[in-house]
Length: 125
Image (cartoon, helix red, strand yellow):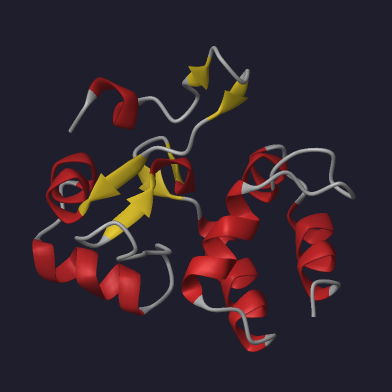
């Protein structure tokens, strides 16, 4: 795991925006202190959104809080998937700034705005 992956709040000085950091399954095994099978189950259950777009399975570091998956992520991810989003599209929405929220949906959830994020997600359909 790189130092940047451990810091989901790393800022790109050129754009002054936060670049998404990605964690692989071995990173998650170490961080969550769970076996590989449990990590894959968390992904299958949509408790951890995952992508293969850059090769191996990767999860955005921003979905972790205090060394655990953010519980709010699953419900929002399921709303997006039910609307027809692919997993990659849902991840992009979670990580991108939403004008209605004024921040990224993941940051809004960290601020305790889960209901507002879910309403914004439902408007994506």
